[in-house]
Length: 330
Image (cartoon, rainbow, N blue to C red; front, side):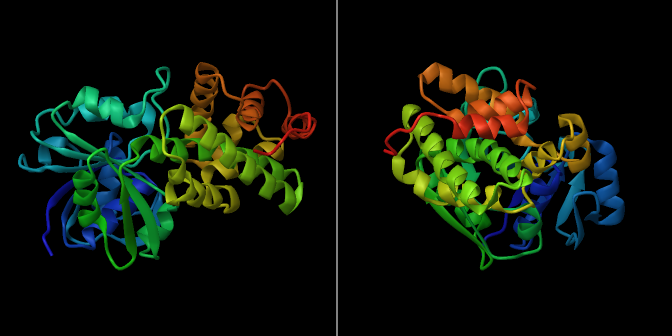
């Protein structure tokens, strides 16, 4: 087994989980975060008590307060920084040459609606880029529970490079070349999870949840195909797999947000209670803009935005969806 030096950017729950997965394969893994106090805690406690408590760091997982502490010859980078901070975090890597970057955050760049791979191509034009997506809760990956994900890249050789880096007996990697589909699926499912949380929080039951997941997939596919994705991608891990997971399990921050909004909490109160980045909050706005740009109907996304922008209550949003005129399913 070939081992490498790897830098993981972002020491939240997902970054820590991926760093642990990489360290278990005997790579030398450096873990950086913009929050230097967090990094100091990780170095002292040798675990991430804030985000993934109870899982000790092996000696080859090294928290660093500065990118300068990472060996200059490092080529492999995994970026879990939320989309709104992705561009600035990539700028920290410009002193490295011929790098390979795997993006593991889900969403679009706020304001521009650019894909994450496009942001990498703009900031690090000499690099190669891959996208990691799929049904993967951080705590389970961190604990070493069996998980399967997708790594997509325009060049399958790049996807395979990261597949070889990550793949283990408990972290199974599938590869493909549909970077658009992988990112649309990973981003929009967070919006659908907010809707599923709202519906469940209001007590609408399993039938409603099933309908939301199914019609949510239809919205994801509609947007993805308009943007150039392959339809079959949405039947895989980055599409249906991720959507089902995040809409049905309370480990999902986006689903949890919906549940709390249904209880009557404000967005700020719900966000404070969850205590971590909720990607769907920003993604919903960007997906709404993309729906307008591509002139496609995304009624669930529209109602989620109505709730987030205080245009209607969670109950009114669900009623608005149910009141839509009957139409052909396909």
